[in-house]
Length: 91
Image (cartoon, rainbow, N blue to C red; front, side):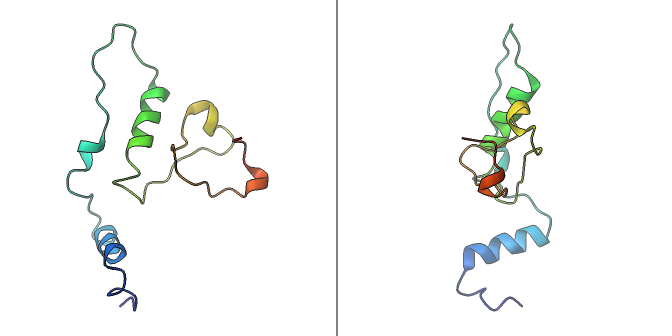
């Protein structure tokens, strides 16, 4: 058992949920609504909205696609990057 479980109940709960392979209750409520639009919406733009909406309820979610992340909108707003600062393409 993880020794820090009692000291970190939120992290322990997250670990339990991940090990049980369960999504958190109500996670679909974080998904954005996409009302019908005669102009349509680019798939990558819709995907970007979803990727930016889910991290608060799914902290285990990772995204990105190497050097194409900026052009195909797979970065998550407000989330840190795992890329070293000297290799990032974001300003």
